[in-house]
Figure 1 (cartoon, rainbow, N blue to C red):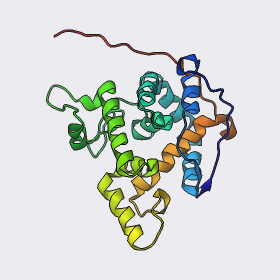
Figure 2: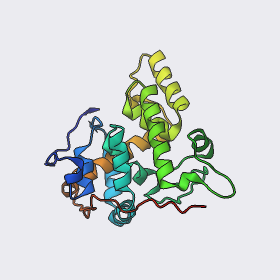
Figure 3: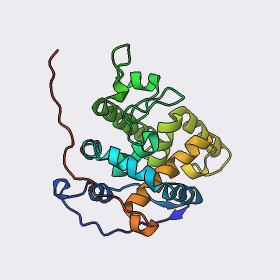
Length: 229
């Protein structure tokens, strides 16, 4: 894949000075952008569903301020704030056929590994604060595991580090490139990174694609209350 740039004039400001959280996200993009047919395909799919995008970002308006703050604390790329679009369409009670739950779609075993309690009374995979912390911790681990390659880390968030590692080793043994776009992966994982890059590109420059995103206030939507017992 060749390099690709989505230029959008976003003045660089301290985080609290943005009026629109989407501008704050755009200014924190750090993933290397690429030109690839899979990204173009996903862009066209999302462009064909403006109502889906509108509903998704209206839901996301409740959670994005918190998620962006947590990502910035960890000095991670702000494209990751858009990962719940791909995972759950920002639905905190989303539940999949593979028993993944919540905004960040943790399967039971990975959720337990990252400290998310799941029992008769509670499923912390649906707790926006706890699940966000767990997801970012997992993504940081994967980023380190794959020697700083965010694309491999994001693919592994979907497909598992073992699956992606084996694909990398298989390509290396055959003398083939080991970047994400060269790997032989299941369709869902193969499409996962392009979906995130497509959403990131649409948010970066919606007018280029005939879309508009309503501004989302760069301020907390919720607070935390100690309810006691």
